[in-house]
Image (cartoon, rainbow, N blue to C red):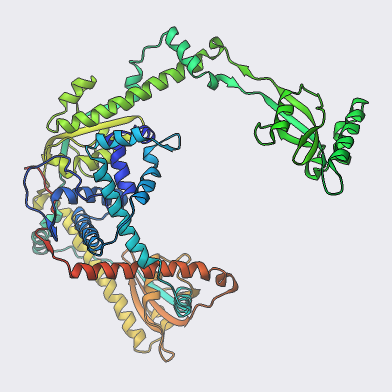
Length: 627
């Protein structure tokens, strides 16, 4: 559905996509989806206030781009708020500095946005329709675009002026392509035979009750708009199909297929026009006398590339050659050779070697295809229009779904309770669960439309919400015992690894310690940052560790996800060297480094500006849930 709306580039959905993608600082002044009346601002920058709704919108964008990275909502909302503040700080600064962008540049930028295009060209009507759908004036939109361009230009002025020195590149190569020789042994997870006491279990449970709660649950009611259901309502008649067939006749037409060859008699400083024409006429006579066209092309044609293959030019495409050539080639019958045709290159003899006439499927023959295409067209249109209505009515009636269900003839369905991570039926879809636990839905409002697939849209609202609740110790005791035993095993394993490390640092050999503990020694020579088969965490720790000093190995202990502890001896370190292959890439590396340096400098500039700006954070953006 949303794909179709993107293609049509109309309505609230497309507007939202346009703002997020095309305007980097999209949250300035956008009205709240559900107006909560007066509220205290979360933060103030100069005379600009930011409210919970502003953070929510920024958070939605953050959560979409960082989905799957397991970053908690509170952290993301904090980052979203900081982004809003920094953007506003920069915006106010560029205005104070008197930076401007011309109206012409803004017009060109807007006209270049594909969301306002029809058939590759800017569509004034579509532009106005999209602005009207979002209840925004052209002046306001132009102002937002100006702000975005100004801020981007200021940023580019800093980032694009940065550069990496030869010293920077040399240091980068030495560090990035450094190699290390290591030996290591792995201390297995130590066994714990004695279970924790009841007192230990109770003490741990009292300190970690928040970790032992029944999961937060919610149930929702929802309406679903699908193409498959709309298709059942499409009425197909013979008359409608015939009209559609005539409108789409090109789709059932096979164009003429014409393959041609030619012999070129070029006009050159050595061969004048008269001579070239005479040569072409002579060849024409030879062909009429029975000479083979392919053979003559190979011996006579001044187009050596095609001449080698008998003059073959492949399938003929009108408009590629000059008009006289096109006209002659398009009129020839199969096997017919033209009279000499003059172009800027000289004189051509043209022959049609293959010809398939244009054909049009009759309505009777194409009826099955026409019926399917007609149904698809009708469903697409109906789905798009219903999607627009679904969006508008669920917005206009935020406290119920019945109004939109009645208007579109949809059924209001219900789910059982489900959690953030698991649900049944429609709630098995992560998009549904994510939206169900969003702040707006938990506050009792309809959700924004959710695109489950290109042909399914869902709007939901909360039925029941059960916050996470503490569980009693009897229920969770086995889990607590398991955690305590795991913690004890980890402590014993770490202590064992640290003991081995201390002995190595005291001068004992790795071989002696390994033999005593019956642990195999492994080694990796010329280890690079790519790490090969070693765990990423181990490689990262090895390259963060200090180099050996005075011939004495550097020793470290690295925990790995399995719970084991790896004791590593770093025996040698060699700086990276710029190989011939790497030298060819240094210019690109320099560009990347310059960009990174420029971004750091830009961030420092913004931080400096912010330190001199009146910024007040009144409260932390918290997740608000229904009570």
